[in-house]
Image (cartoon, rainbow, N blue to C red; front, side, top):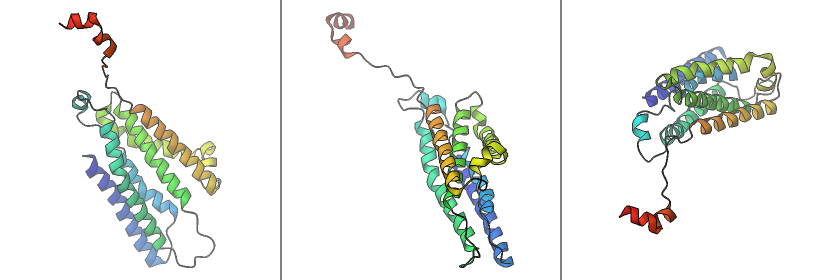
Length: 215
């Protein structure tokens, strides 16, 4: 079930960051945002298994749009991911001294990055779920998402806009939210309703010819 996978992925990253925070507290070395990014990757990988629409032949035979089940899964997974992100950010903040030397990095670019990562995974899972490899949706979407993130992070062309530095905090935030918006639009397009509705023409049925045929 996707919920077991999602909870395990979120807990795995949080436990890892808890251990790292304990080590950082012992050595008096604060954790950086890179530790939060690394810990959140397990939740992103688990999220790739959530949009899978189980029993699709049954749902397509009912007068319910096909996108209701995966969208419901995603909406239910959003609070779990939000709590996971908040917990991991609190663990990182707990290792930072009250008066750190210099300025602490801003948090809002990190939140934008994690949001973009999640929506990229959802878009990849939605595309895989509507392909001939739907049974392997999460197993395909997770590596594809990681490959896209690695390309965006390490490619010189994209790193100028998506990684801080060289990009500014505001530029990183705008770029990742733009990616998140594009991924959300792609997800909505992929999850469009494939169920064919047959509408009844009232004017045609009310005509005398149609009434005669019905008799």
